[in-house]
Image (cartoon, rainbow, N blue to C red; front, side):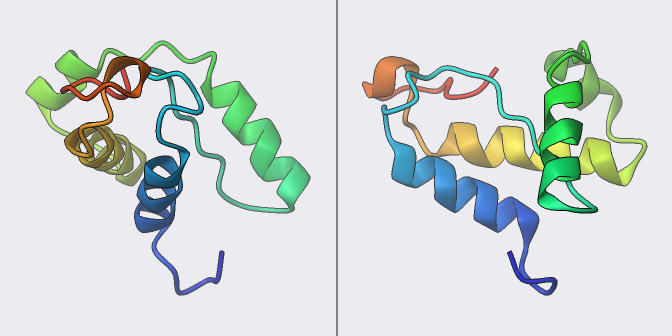
Length: 93
């Protein structure tokens, strides 16, 4: 990913190419910064954080990280991949 590229565009484009190959609905975690190893560790750590997306959307984002979470959640679900790749509203939870 180039420094000038959009992280959210890259994630959405990557998910759209996966189709049903990752057996949605699922969880998406993104680590940004440092080396590739550091980014992977950040992504793994983020998978352990409890996040209530309905509550987060209702109260609105209070940080750039939360804005990215909401944007990715909405854009990935808008792809319409759905459960098991059969189409639908829920691709990520």
